[in-house]
Length: 116
Image (cartoon, rainbow, N blue to C red; front, side, top):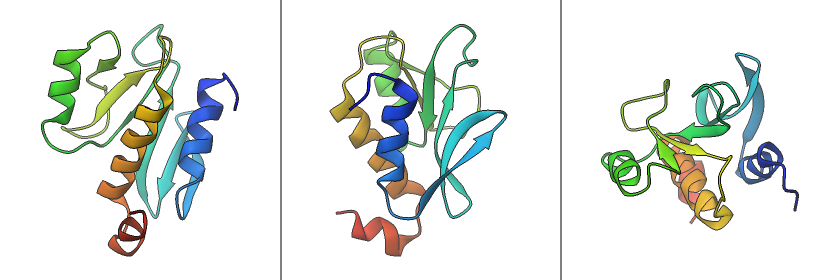
């Protein structure tokens, strides 16, 4: 396992069924079908490294309220998308759960149901 946050994120995302990587404004994102699971950014917010992904309704607000040093409201995505800073200590087991939940929200049902 590497310490490079984009590589760790890549490994988490590409382990999911039918997820592939593509560039989104020059930065990596991971997609299933035509829907984005995770978007990585070293530009938004300015001067920070992080990613954002869909989350169930209410989760973003709870995470940002509980730990604003680790979570943020992303500049893009949807109303319930959550941003995660990667330039602070990261709990990668928690990130795995967050990425899996994002996948379940956007993947076709036949794929999401197989995730367990």
